[in-house]
Image 1 (cartoon, one colour):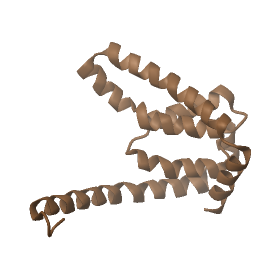
Image 2 (cartoon, helix red, strand yellow):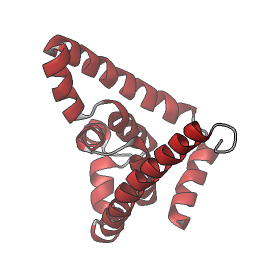
Image 3 (cartoon, rainbow, N blue to C red):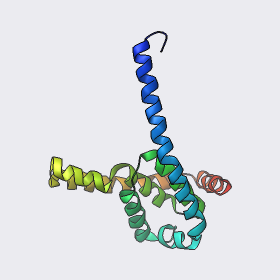
Length: 157
């Protein structure tokens, strides 16, 4: 690109470097926190709040964790990997990822001020229903062998 269109090529390089620097500022602290969580938080505690037997409480906890988390979506995947390693149910992992990607509380506050509370609450409610439905559908359609493979891969990492 630098040869064919030098001006555009310089812009591409500049944007790529900006994105790389942003990722480098976000990823190390996330891995540090995940390492601490992996060591300090016993599997039993995670299972109590988000395991297969946690029921609705687990889904609410996963939703709250995802909604109150900050950072770009790619930061949620290492967290989901630690959850897999600790034995969190797939439904709760899917709820966590869905909440992280769509129901950020700071975003909702911005929407209320800019677009009105009616819009923000309708969007939040629709997202909540969609996240739960999709999480349940995704777990039901994930084969038992695929789920076991995911849990085994998480343990190996």
